[in-house]
Image (cartoon, rainbow, N blue to C red):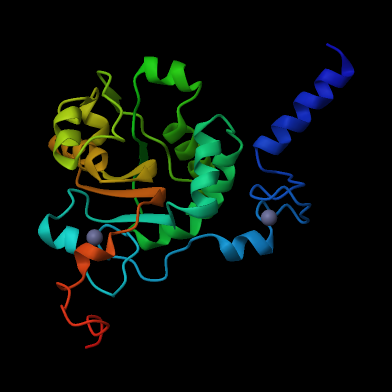
Length: 255
Ligand SMILES: [Zn+2]
Ligand SMILES: [Zn+2]
């Protein structure tokens, strides 16, 4: 093999494994000391200040969000590193678009968040079908789980599979998503799951329909407890968590 090809490959691997980094993953500016995100960009990333203790979405006021009050998610607890907006959203789109090295960046961001959970026995990526994997070119949740595993020492468990294609979730309502997903996951080896505390790993927490369906399947297969960790989550809509609007102008938010 040509020496330059080998060097380029070595460098790319070094970059992907996160052992060395030269530029900020967000803005591309030079960084030092192996940082992956520069101080300027870090400050601008949408880390929620107050989150719902159940679904982990950003909320306006402390306490369980309106959506969780109305209908509790199946997993015990969900936590996400960023709100799904701004630079975090752009990073996620790049990752899903094929910039795989970002899995390492995300894993490093998720690592401190692991402390919010009782220590899991295993990380379980949300599975995708072989066809979905071919279309995307890689399995984004699995790669994320593998990188997080390397950082945390918690093993990855791929005991489940996705048995059929599901329609694009984006345009569907909550109810349609549930119907769309029903029965699409299957645990191949129940023994691996039984009695275990599992942490589902995914890229984005949107309506929670995927996490609910997958967690239900794991619980039915005998898992002791199921939590969820994702990189980004769509913030809770403040309009749902706020009391009905006062009709008098400008006084609706005073209490
Ligand atoms: Zn930057
Ligand atoms: Zn909530």
